[in-house]
Image: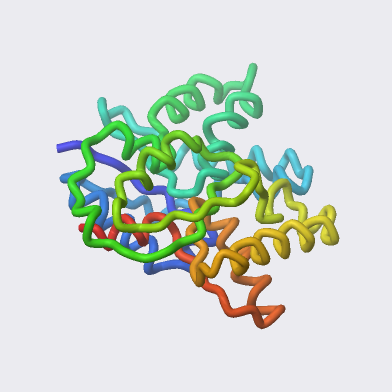
Length: 237
């Protein structure tokens, strides 16, 4: 039986516990033994986005300690594409030529973003049971090929995609803090496009995108909701 430790991103932990439950159900349905490290905190991405390199490194060092494993075939699964990019792409730069670089390489090697991991196993889901029309917003940082291969299996869902494949929700690179006007315009553009299609739900692949959209529609009193693709997958169990 494959084993995996789940890293639960900060926003998902605080705002979207139901999605975390669906993630565990999804993995267990595929005979994955799921572990959870109660000492886990953050990957360090918020600090990196603010330019606080020292704090980002300190938090990242704790991540390395929390998710080191010597077991062959044991993976750390991250359901947030931006957090996964932080670990896979930025940790090697942060820990280059440091005493932690060997441990970093080991952790990076065993870490998978959720959709890459699902691409490595055979999904045993009844895709035909899920119906509806959804506006599909893939994170800027995700492997869009993996996402497309997954969503294409839902034969009874009408997936509507943004006109531009690299459309941003406005949350990336700490835009809400560093360039709030640009962030607001990007978020408004995505929501306007989704509403123009008649879709009532935006499906995302990242909790950071989801939190950004949810906050925006609440402030603007806009009638549209969000789901994580994990939630859609769980419906097919």
